[in-house]
Image (cartoon, rainbow, N blue to C red):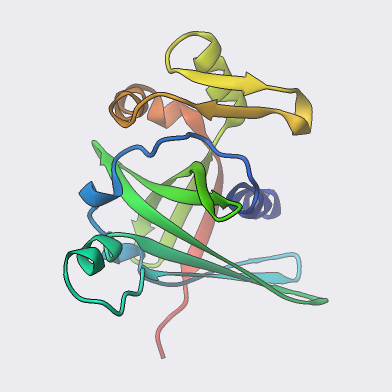
Length: 193
């Protein structure tokens, strides 16, 4: 099950699919969550994945650098029997009540395409749980009119995305956030040397 969750995390982040065309909250309103910063790992069935999380790097000073440093950089490095793979993403945080989210920016052809939402919880200082949005639960919420969105296609070719504005998304997640996120993945912090 853990391999499935990690695969879902990597596929969700790497794919062109998005959960929403708008973030939960604007990047300019984000507060970095330094508790996430560090190196995390997941081991399953002979494969090892490291997840590096930290502030986005900026050389320049001033307001542009301050805005950029509100964003979080996530680098996934997969150690497989046949070699290494790596992927990098930029995200910013949102909080709704006690729940914490990452708005992971998805880029297609060099342009922003939307966001993947990842709910996360620090279980303790060395354990991090990521949960991905359940597409079937999101489809049901859109069909029921609880949130604006679109659904096209069926099966693996289906695409479901929230089209509501950020404030509406935050209200929706405030009510239904606990029910929409599944496919959890637990990561352990790699101790500093």
